[in-house]
Length: 282
Image (tube, rainbow, N blue to C red; front, side):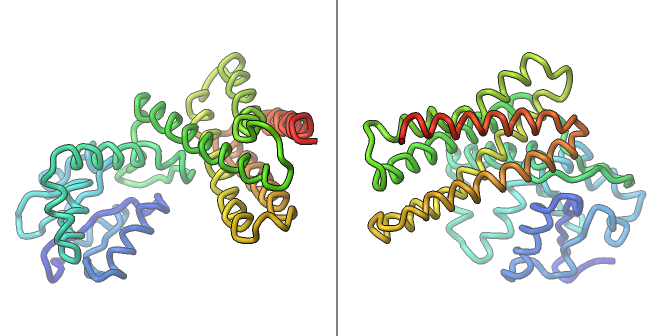
């Protein structure tokens, strides 16, 4: 039952991000393969009688636990990650002792953890230990705010890049006003007409516009590298971004069990964006 180093990390195997970064610990050599255990296989390392003593049920849903099978204290979340990473990067341990940095990384960890089902939607499974994060309004609103700030900055940068092909005054502001239709109109309609799941919907909407903005960044870099000689670059960037956001919106409405009429409304808002682009740039 025990693993060689007597510590095991217990991860949510219904969370793709959790599975990915714990697998990264194994590949990087800071965690033996047998010390990475899914919650659905918890009985491999802990007997039912000891689970309650070794794991805090609430914390385990939001902070990945690193359990000491020899009886030492269980580490959670940032503390567990620092313990593992400092084996390869001793500087991590020293940085974690700086309280402002430690608090910032705890906030960042919680921001991702409480919103991980929004970032990467997965269906709930019938398991003995439910790892789904609890709803936390403050972290949801903070996530939405961070996503919109990033999206706004990326959109402004894309506007500046597009102006290299088709010069206009204040391109960043105009692109931001154009792109804002994609999230502002659905947000307003959801706040007015959506009877339930509106905060979840807004979280998913923030995620997909952030993904759309991320897909614009390679085009910005390529345009600069090619000295703005190939206008097909921003056109392709917009098409790729739009197609991805449309697919994500459809998929996320299915996940939320909401009507695909919301996808239709979002597509209409996207048409408004195209009209705004034509008004400002043509």
